[in-house]
Figure 1: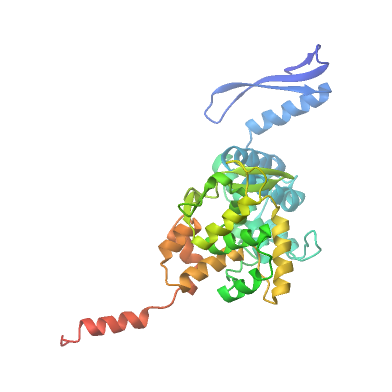
Figure 2: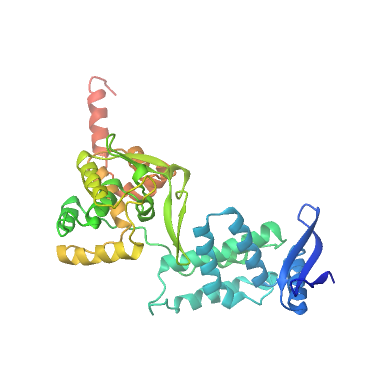
Length: 361
């Protein structure tokens, strides 16, 4: 077997050849193994994956799937998928051959999810369980597309865990005014929550704003990145979608608040982030001041919904709301907020009556 000793480093390494999916021959090297047996085991696993078929163990398929996602998706997306698979899917299907997983197996797994609890000891929500069902189906579709699996058993099994709740929770302007009045105007969270409500930003977009992204003369904020906490480390990435890259025009009072906020930052530079608190800190501030205001509880993301509902109430079109929120398309906006747009059916009928009153039909 192509396993060799690196006498200088005192470790073992692998050098082997394999054929990719195009039939092209490539060489693979891997160094740093402490034992020869570890190097041989790694080589066997690597070559098995390259020659993988539908009878491989699900654990190996999951590894191939995650390698593909790591190469083709954002880091936060990859980490989310990895967490779901390792925590909720692999423990059940790990050693099963992929082509041996039946629709009945999938339905039994879904049944076990219904009786599972999260880290807080709470039952899994229908929305989260649906995400897990979708994740397993994506892994099996990957096997169908690239490794010769005849049928995705998830499509036969269906979804028995329920659907995400599509209701939108939000504050009216009166409720937000009650909430924001509980802050001191010098408090940095005062400005942060004003921006979230009056600009409709995602929390990661707010956390990524730098001094250079704000033009206080033109009254604009440029959104071109987002902040994530991944494995305990803060990471700046591109926004969620291409349309999330946008410039938001802000009202004068908000520009004044941001100017006052920047004045309290020590030696700010163009690259200085305006808001350095963590996602969880904003969530705690939201909860504490919601209680002080005596209004209903909402999530941080619901401030984004609140901005959208405010614009709709003010009579702005779905296109404008979509552009301001950075949705990929107007259809996304309508899927979420269509029930908030006022019905114009009666107005249409009245206009048609006016238009055709001189006609005899």
